[in-house]
Amino acid sequence: MHGSRHDHLVCELAERLGRAEHVVVYGPSGIGKSTLLRELGARLTAIGVQWSMAPKAESLRDVVLALESLYPDGRGGGLLSPQRVRAQFCNVAETSRGALLLDHVAGVGTALKGFLRSLRGTRLGIAFAVDIDAPRDKDRMRRWCLSHREFSVPPASSTRLRQMLVRANVELGEPLSSEAIAHLVEAAQGRPGYITVCLELLRDRRYWNGGRVHLTLLENDSEIGTRNRGGWRRVPMVIRHPTRGT
Image 1 (cartoon, one colour):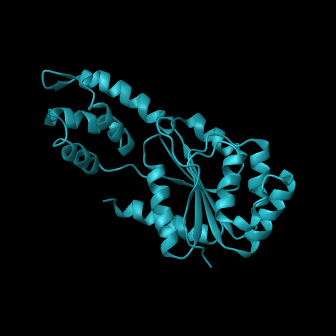
Image 2 (image 1 turned 45 degrees about the horizontal axis):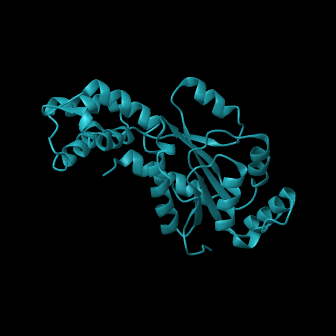
């Protein structure tokens, strides 16, 4: 269960997207931005806002595909110029309230920036999820000039991370010691995604020796896995809420 700060953030973001604002949710890899977007989608559904999500927004095409799911009446069918497609989406977004959730935004080129700016002033709210693992990442994000409000995703509590590990103990062939659990919770630095990667790796016997965990090897691989998790699994290009909002 998330804390009140997390729940409050989800509610505030949903309200802002319902007012057609553009927002950025940011934090280090594994902090829970994707989970927050999924919860945000559920909240948008509850308040009657139609939404669509691009699980990996790497290009203008990813955004257009999500928009086609959200606004089928605005799709160009591949026959129209980019300018005409943009105009059609803007027209339908001006009359139909909706929200676009863009996960794993790694960069915003000139074409995508112009497209997103053209959607301002419509009834479409946009949420960008961006990994910020160092100060230079935040500087890079701000140079995109998306005219957005920024919200930092709060870290998970040590209690929640410890519970994730304790619950998984029954599934592991050899349970983690209390010392190993405390060590991994500290290494996670509030990132539930880090703990998730740890648990996936612990299914591999090479991280075990005589009932004990090779913590150094596990920590190194978990850190790499957390930062590159977006490429580990194939996810659907677009997730769409099936009922249209008003």
